[in-house]
Image 1 (tube, rainbow over the protein chains, first blue to last red):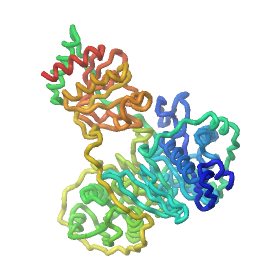
Image 2: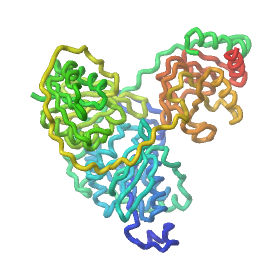
Image 3: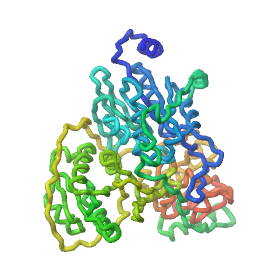
Image 4: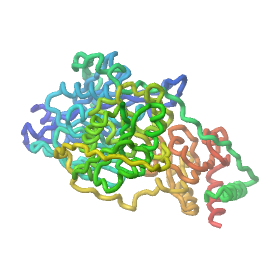
Length: 285
Length: 314
């Protein structure tokens, strides 16, 4: 614990008070790059050879976790549930500044829906002592359900706080947190007890790039794999068997039906005038 | 007999859900129950008229103010009292807060953002996935289901002369663990891109930041707003991210979308498929944007845009 303080800003204020530290878990998912070319064939999706990255929404969660650590002291533990390749996403989180990383990976987890995923994540989080806060991104760009943070919170019996755009205040001693949530009708400030589960929106911060030192650290850090047995879930509770929703069939979005009429003319002024006339005739301007 | 339970905090959406639940009776053989939370007034009469067989009412201070924890707890109790195996809620942001909480309590498979729901020996629900590029069909394989349906997916049926008994639902009123301190309404000053009827979308065809004035002048002449591709916002920082359109930005439904110097990669175009009319100006005739545009100009934006602005001003 002293080590964690010595590396944080708290070292200068001599506040070695143990309660003031925050143990923050950040849950990340590995997804295809948003620039990936998505191809859909026979109900399945392929991403070509595009790189897999940290789900872009989760980067905001990692950044916020690191900022909270820098402010309050403590440590950031990144967790990902996924195949072996998801190790790379965890390395990214470590390179940004997370202290530890664990990969929850097991063939029996394949096909897990929100119910099964939240069951496994809650068990994994339960393996970590003294967790104060769990952070999620708003949603995963591939699954797009946006339910996992809420479901995991319910499993843990902790308060879910969603659409969080600002963490206004944390009082580790009083075990309370105050956040601002971005809702359709405006900003809502709420308070809750710790531990809490938070999903963040992109307005909360601007994620940093990994530092050179961070990348070196990530390349050296051992990332343990937790199997289903390690976290204490049985095969029937996770994967398709433990799911309420079966792995979806995926079809391409019906294309926008349009036949482009090319507007031509002898000069830019002429084509511009023709286009303006057509838009006026369509009654859109 | 099992039951389909319906809830929305908005009565107009509750009517849509009740109407559809009644249509599902034919294929699913379930009775229709509706939850009525908060001040009941005479709202139950309409619930019956649209097709509810039973209405479960619960009125408690914690069930107002749109708190998802007590509302989901109350709904779980009502679902048990009503012997409901299917719960339909709306997929507004609030409904999406509610659905997973309720699903956890019921141990139910949960789908949100549904744009179509069918019974084919199991519930199947379509929703957009992968950032809106695709339609995913979720199959709910658990005995109970919670489905959050987008507004206007189901048509509101005709009212019928029906009535029924209102059952009072039990509510355990735990102190909510999350306390609302204040709610500040949105300021009116933010970008009005979301509601703009005319949107000028700009991309890498613009060579430098100063040139954006060309697009701005056209937007002003048309009474529209300027939006942009991801590159211009996140890589070049020429415009704020609140003006970014597409997969990681906004989804818009303007009357006119005018794409200028935008090639039309799918990451961008998912944000504009809802536009009524799309026109594009691009120097490359092969640019994918022309495949989805209604009108196209192959030309140099630096010549065409000022000419168009001048023409519109006249």
